[in-house]
Length: 189
Image 1 (cartoon, helix red, strand yellow):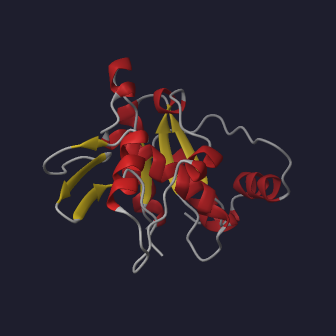
Image 2 (image 1 turned 180 degrees about the vertical axis):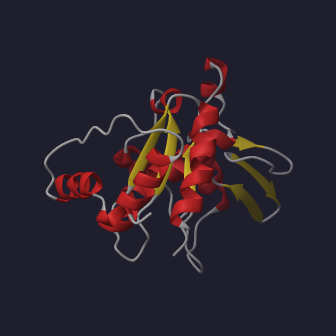
């Protein structure tokens, strides 16, 4: 099936390309909505957020989108309970931060526009604003001098947990003149 030749799909693509507001596509069944999302992303070269009613549906949609698009698909994870929101050493928090950063970087045309699936539950949970991430970030560089005390102080002041051995995002360990940091978000250049 060549979606590019379908009249209805062509209208959807034209309306989205022209920026004429949201497009509501109803009556899809099976994996067609996922196929259409992959086609829209590929045709327009834009980020795609595929919203699903439940967490399991978002995981299944990610598999289908990967099959249809051939690109990496990320799933915005959701916390299962309110107690999880308070845990600073949290892999879900780290993944959510990474995805926010990916969306901010989507304007960088050197990168492939992201395709993300998310459950309604995941979308209803907080993520920090990109500005807050930038303001709460620390940049470390090779051959740059920084005192161990000031670095350790910054980590503690920003919610990092000091441990003997790092295992989770948000932890750090100091052994003599070495500090191991498991950053929840790390940019690679």
